[in-house]
Amino acid sequence: MSQLMELIAELCPYGVEIKTIKELSSYRRGSFPQPYGKSEWYDGEGAMPFVQVADIGDDMRLVDNTNRKISLIAQPKSVFAPKGSIIISLQGSIGRIAITQYDAYIDRTVAIFQDISEELLPKYFVYQLQRIFAIKKKTARGSTIKTITKEEFTEFPIPVPPLPVQSEIVRILDNFTELTTELTTELATELTARKKQYEYYRDMLLSYEEKDNVTIKTIGELSSYRRGSFPQPYGKSEWYDGEGAMPFVQVADIGDDMRLVDNTKRKISMLAQPKSVFAPIGSVIISLQGSIGKIAVTQYNAYIDRTVAIFKNISSDLLPKYFVYQLQRIFAIKEKTARGSTIKTITKEEFTDFPIAVPELTEQERIVSILDRLDALCNDISIGLTAEIEARKNQFEYYRDKLLTFKELS
Image 1 (cartoon, rainbow, N blue to C red):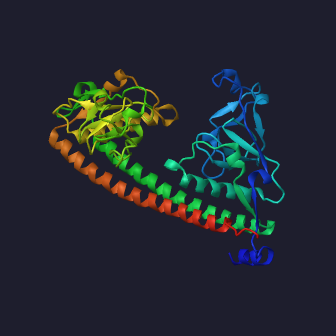
Image 2: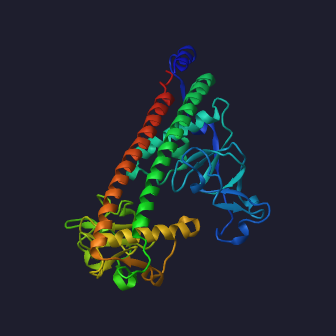
Image 3: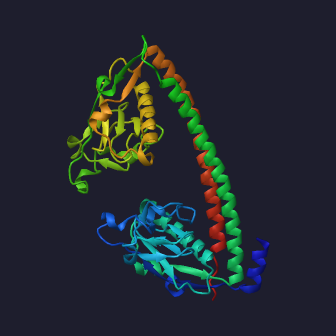
């Protein structure tokens, strides 16, 4: 850091010139022949990586393998990004940036920077873009930039210190990034290990063969369920908020800890409530669309969307919390066997035929007690590790912003 201070004192003691993106570079959006679903645009001999927003990682790199490969026929209708290109997402998750580590073609939701000024080191430019979009996300409603015009984007200011100063900043940030990545990887590995340990004991405690005192029944034999609902169209303002509005649970409101989030994203109005399905506190609910198999025991009264179902008439042979742990185990197994580790669809017949082991209630109580303790321990550790990872990221962002902020030359 002292070397950087010396360079700044020597080369730009009175500040640096601030220029806009359009003064320092141009960019071009990618493209793709329409319609997207046409099979001849994908794969085959000579197919190349095709970069969409989801293929741009949080580490300023592309994923190792893009979700799609673009065919030889489609390549002339797209935009080529050679290895080492700076690309950025300008639709969906806006502001995801990467320096490509392989040749690829890019989608129209992604742009490639061209004609970057010799006044800028490419990696310095990338760090500045990352900083700018981090600021934009903090000030955007809901912490998401949903739209951005070309005019807004090209007017973003970039400080332009002398190249030796840029080089030293890049060196410091690269080292910091490497250390942060190593630490967060270690913490994430520890977190994964704890989750696997919990899953191992959960599956061991909940797995039975049919015996004299343990019967195996299907979900359909042990309960019924009803999907939620919501008046259409979703966007009609009168369905939301107002006096007497209640929590409205959608898939994103179901946490990974078998609880609802503290505050649902939406509140359902008194006018819409009779057209939805009520889930009283203590209800067992499950997502059956999108992220299938997210389960919760509701900790407050709510109404549920049609993407969510509520279990009704749960057999007196089952403790609700034992039922929840069994559901969690079943869907964990289904995800492991699903293509791409995601259950994308499930029919009512498949779902109601899932088997559930039903030991005596005293045994269920014993299992729930053990799993509650293991779950609490795992969650405590997870919260601590997650907080540490977040702290490291915040620390990096703090120093990045400090290093990349300059007084403007007067």
